[in-house]
Image (cartoon, rainbow, N blue to C red; front, top):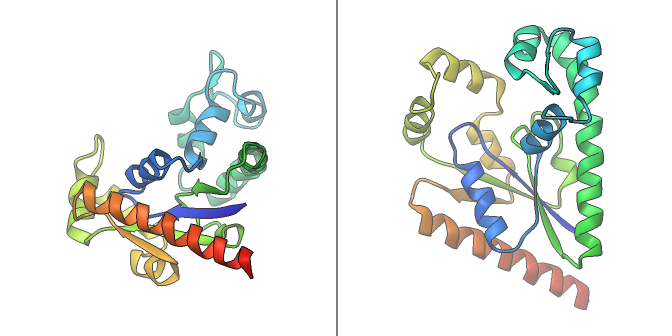
Length: 203
């Protein structure tokens, strides 16, 4: 199984890029979506988190705002939360890879926002970084509901700089040149990986 890791800083177009891979029949594991599932209605993490972070459960799911209020700005509490969620996400990811393999898939993609920050690069055979010019990035982010300049800067502070991500990438997808351009880059990356894999299998 060939594993592509896709990442990108906030506002860089990672989510749209992920959809482009999915449109090319590459199975995508979305880490954020996995967490939403774990915290959502009847999610596997709901009761465990409520036991430790009392007052976060609302009906049969976790109130993400209430949970965020308890962990925001407190690294030790955040680590405790990650200690619960990360192994559960890892199990979901392992199951996803197994299912994809059973279905005869050759390539899968892990959509991981904090790929470098959480040292997931070694889990991947190739790393793809979605990137855009800084002014485009800022414009996209500032158009989001509830966003402020300070909040944007705080988020950036916690993320590996785009320049460093680009340096460590196997492939870079420029998302500020239009959708067609980005789709073309995605198709070329998939083709290159398939060709390299097929060539190595012939040796």
